[in-house]
Amino acid sequence: MDLKSGYPFWAIKNGLISNFPPVTSDIECDVVVIGGGITGALIADELTTSGFATTVVEQRDIGWGSTSASTALLQYEIDTHLLDLVKWYGEKDGVMAYQGCADAIDSLAELASEVGDVDFARQQSLYFASRPEDTNTLHDEFKLRRKHGFKADWLAANVVQERYGLLSSGAILTHHAARIDPYRMTYRLLERLVVRGGQVFDRTTIATITPKAKGVILRTTDGAQLRCQYVVMAAGYASQRWLKQKVAKNLSTYAFITDPMDKDALGALATTMMWESARPYLYFRCTGEGRLLVGGEDDDVDIPARRDARVREKCHKLIHRISEIFPKFDLIPTFSWAGTFAETDDGLPFLGPHREYGSRVLFAMAYGGNGITYSMIGAKLIRDEIEGRSHQLAKLFSFDRLDRIN
Image 1 (tube, one colour):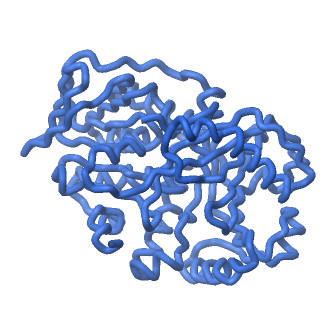
Image 2 (cartoon, rainbow, N blue to C red):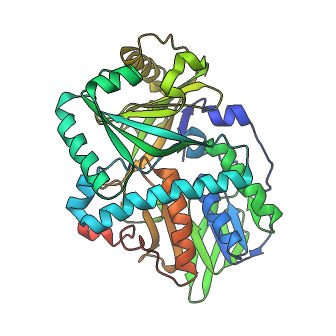
Image 3 (cartoon, rainbow, N blue to C red):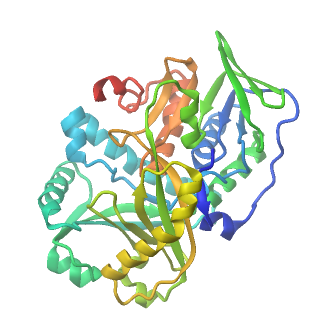
C-alpha cells in the first residue's frame, strides 16, 4: 500500500537510522507486532518492558510508511469535539477519551526522555474560530472541558490578535500539548527493543494469519513461519485489508515545511501549535530548529498517482492560506508531501480483538488526527488485554462500538 507522496521531511532529515534484516527463518516468541511505524514501536516497547518476548515485522523499511509523513501534533484534543462525544456516548465515556489522550502525552514525554534525541517538547495548542459561526460552539466546548478539569483558557478576539496576530472571533488555548519527531522516536524505541532482547525485521510481508486455540501461526510471502501467543496488527492504514468489515475511510492530507526561521519572527508560533475550526482544518507548528510545518487541504483521494499529482497544487494552496493569516511571512517550502490517513465515523480508534479473529489477534487502529496519542493508549490497552486485565477505555475503543455508531 502506497501511503505517501513527495518528500516527507522526517525520513529525509534522519535518513536510514538503523538497518534491520528481513525474516529468513522460522521464529517463536510471545508476541508478533505487525507494523514498524510509530504505532508498532510504542506497542512493542510497552510489551518488551512488561517482559514479553516481542518480534516486530514491517513490510517496508522501518518508519517508512505513514510515520514518515506524520506532522506529529500531540494533543489531548480529538478531532471530534467533546460536546459530540458526550452526546453520543455519555459524559463519562466522552471525558474518559479526552483524559486518555491527555495522559498519553505525559507517557510520551516520559518515553521521549528515556530514549532521548527525538525533538520532543511541551507546547501549547490554540484552537481558533476561523469562521464567526463557529465561535459559540467553541466556547461551549471550552466550558465543558473546564467543567471536567482540562486546563484551557478562552481568548476573546482582541486577545487572539494581540498575542498571535490572528484575526479570529475567539479561541481555546490549551496548556497540554507537545511535538515530536515520530520517525526518530520509532527508530529509538526499536533500537532499544533489540538491546533488550527483542527482534525487529523489515522488508518482510505477512501472507497469512492463522489463529489457533493456544496461539497464532503466521507465514511470510517467502515461506517463513512465525509462531506466537498473540499477534498485534499495527500496520497503520494497511491494517484494514485484514478485516472484511469496513471500519474507516482513507483520506489524504498535505503538508510542507520551511527552512529554519528566525525565532523573533515566529513569535508565539515557536511554542504554540495552531489549528482552525473549519473542516477540513488547517494546522501548523514549529520544529525544534525553528522550521514551520503546515498541513491541511485534506481530500478523499486514495489513489496514489492522483495524490502524487496534487502535492504541488495543494502546497500552493497551503502557502496562500498561511499568507492570509500571517502576511509578514515569506514562506518558501523546503519539502512538501502528502500522506494517507484513515478516519472513523466518530474520530475514535479501534483497539483490541475483532470477532473475525478471536482473542489472540489484537488490532491497533490508531486512526484520526490523534494517531500517536491513540497509539500510546493502545500500547497500554493491548498490554492489559494480553495480561488478562481490562483497560478503562477497552470497551469504548472496541469494535463493538460500531453497533452503537450504526
